[in-house]
Image (tube, rainbow over all chains, first blue to last red; front, side, top):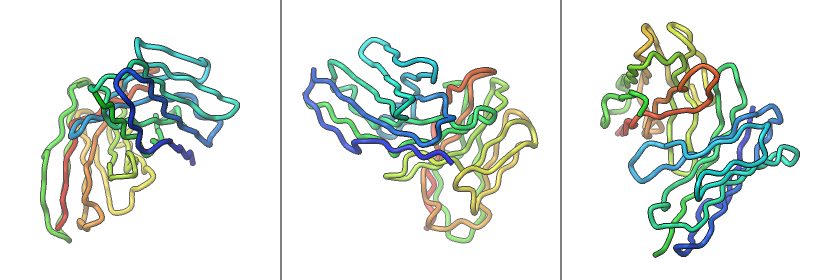
Length: 113
Length: 113
């Protein structure tokens, strides 16, 4: 089955700096890569996603890049703010018919004011 | 929130007792999923459903069963709860045909003593 590794597990940045979280996946058939943000005690919420036919996608301060050859994708957050502090999860969809995804173990991002 | 609710939101139960968690959705989504979330493990798929009476196992299905007798309800049952099943359980749906975007319910915190 699919295996997704996420790094780093914790990340601390100063407000205004950029943050980068990286994920690698094992199944070359995976074709959809979402990122979720989970605040303490809340549900995971989709913040951005990318499909395998696209190399980069941007939404305001958030961007995701995908390298299919190397089988890795990254989340980039620019001009970080304290409200960006949360746990971020990447995922890879490996079964299109059933919508089955494998998640990374999460990155706890702390943005210090 | 894609019209997803979970009940109960919190439950404490004793080892060996049966427990049923309910996921209810109001928007006629075909695909529904049950995940568990534990510290350091991200989200792991327990079971999923692709229609009424159509279900299949995920990566951590041992000790769990599911049922879906109508589109709006997806039930997760722990036949005989164990302490290792103490976790936060999230239900999720995929938003529509041709979409892979997952939306999560608010979660159920289950403690098995």
